[in-house]
Amino acid sequence: MPPPPRRQKRSLLNTGGEVALWGDPALAAKLAECLAVDPELRLPFTHGFHTYPARMHPHTAERAIALFGGKSGAVLDLFVGSGTVALEAVRAGRPFTGVDIGAVALEIAWARTRVFRGGEERLVDREGFEIAKRAARFDLRDMPMPDWGTEVESWFSPHTLREIALVLDLIEAVKREDLRRVLRVVLSSVVIRLSKQASDSVTVVDRDWKPWPPRATYRLFSEKCKETAQSLGLLAQDMRDRGVKPVEPEFWLEDARVVKLPKGAFAIGVSSPPYPGTYDYVFHHFLRYPLFGEDPGFARANEIGARREFKKGGDALKKYESDMTQCVKNALDALAPGAPLLLLIGDGRFGTRDVPAADLVRDIANRLGARVPAGASQQRTEWSFGARAGKKAEHFILVTRG
Ligand SMILES: C[S@@+](CC[C@H](N)C(=O)[O-])C[C@H]1O[C@@H](n2cnc3c(N)ncnc32)[C@H](O)[C@@H]1O
Image 1: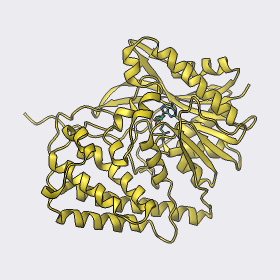
Image 2: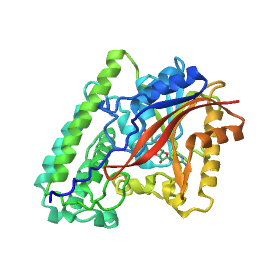
Image 3: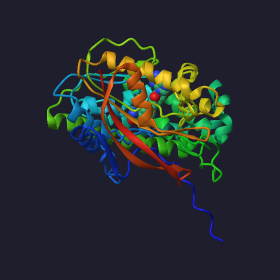
Image 4: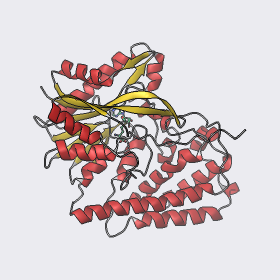
């Protein structure tokens, strides 16, 4: 009998099929245009650099800013994640403020939005190559296991974990701080592949797991450094070619429910909030936090809509609704009068009940006296372990102050 197909470690990205329009036809058509993406298209610039569960498609972010954001003005994303909206705001030459409870997310977003000058992004490749070369010469028996290593050791073969610790040590010795930060994110981008974890969002041991051969960490890391340098180079080139001056984006490690934003300061808000009961971002990144010397406590305490909370039942759905109400209120207050808030949100599940996300956003808007002039809803295929698991809709919804 042939062996079962190997499960892929999939990067979750929203792409998909037909779109149903609702509300104002012209606005809904514009929203649909934002959702119309080519799933086969290679993600441009640094968009494909780091996997992230429920990452927004870059074309959705790009078109949302272009079609709804006016000609200028700052962009807000209360749930910045890996920084898709941040990068598109930078590419549009707009000021950007992004909020997230995850230090890992913010570091990824920061790295993705670097626009190096004078070809300096090539240093990422050069440093990666040097680190890999030096690491390969090192006798791992001399490598003490760091404290953080003992917390995650069951997720790696012992030699792979020591290799990761060594690469991290060598990164710390790099002189330039910006390069150190980018290199740590590069290491973060390969760490799940190097682990026994099934995928970014499936935090169980892969039943097809096989140990990596010695020094695979160095190879994957330096290959990824090369690829990252190329992506960063394309970004810098694109900005130069279009004559767009990058504005340094701001990333805030804050809870979107209570964050204090300047009132009326933003021309547009574009966000994909956590979907109700669908992901556990803290679990997804638990192997990554140690690479950044960060503690996941803040994220664990403040994550909205986490699957782990929905699994407990109780008043998790009510709590999600009230948390999201607070976030939508904060976003609307931060927008200039008449400015749009665009939310990309997928249906969730609570026990045996489906949670239709578009109804939920309409209820929240009603509660706040806000308006939902239009939306576009698209069926998405859900994947689990590389297999088709079911269908749910994802909605791109326009909310404005009443
Ligand atoms: C769907 S993801 C955003 C993905 C992002 N648009 C991208 O393209 O990568 C939702 C994000 O919300 C963040 N989040 C959850 N609870 C939060 C809270 N209370 N305040 C701010 N961010 C939160 C999660 O950490 C996660 O990064």
